[in-house]
Each structure stands twice: as C-alpha cells, then as structure tokens.
Amino acid sequence: IESKESKLVELQKELEESNKRSQLSMSEDAKNREELLAELQEVKKELSDSLAKADEALRVKDETLELKESFEEELQAKIEQLQSDIATAQAESEAAAKAKTKETKDL
Image (tube, rainbow, N blue to C red; front, top):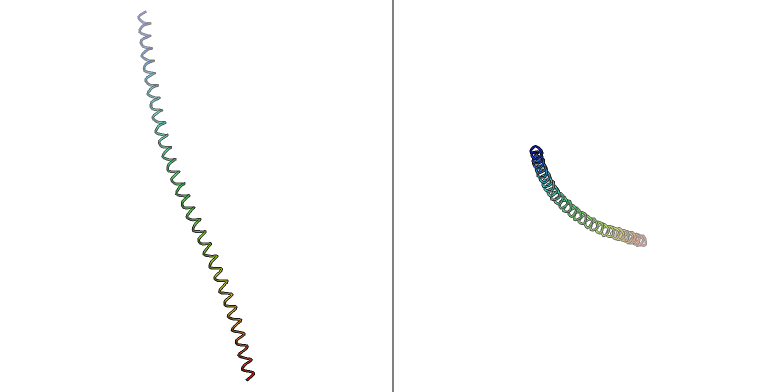
C-alpha cells in the first residue's frame, strides 16, 4: 500500500510539473503571439505610411504632368499664331515689294 501511495504521490508531482510546464509553455506562446501581433501591426503601419507617401508622390506627379501638358498646348498655340503672323507679314512684304517694283517701272 505504501509503495502504491508513494507511486501515487510521485505521479501527482509529475502531473503538477507537467501542468506547470504546460502553463509556462502556454504563457510563452501567448507572449510570442502578442509580440508577433505587435510586430505585424508595426509592419502594417509602415506599409500604410509608405502607401500614403507613394499616393502623394503619384498625385504630385499627375498634377505636374497636367501642368506640363497645359504649357505645351499654350506654347503650341503661340507657335502657330507666330507662324501665321510671319506668313501674313511675308505676304504683305511681298505685295509691297511688287507694288514698289511696279511703281518704279511705271516711272
């Protein structure tokens, strides 16, 4: 009976130790999960910040491109107007030169 009782006490001690190890392991697992979750949240925040910066950079780039295109359109319109003015001035100059030549011949 004594050996059975001592065996029972020994088994109870082993069970208690096993329970302690299980609780410790569960506590460590919970701590590790919390640490991983905190790290994941930090990475998520960094990614979110990076995306926000990238979105802002794209917005600025789009605005700059629109402004450039607008300037190019205005410049092209001015070039076309200058070309028209030059053609008109040349035609008027040629007409004046012809008139002057005719006037000189008539004299």
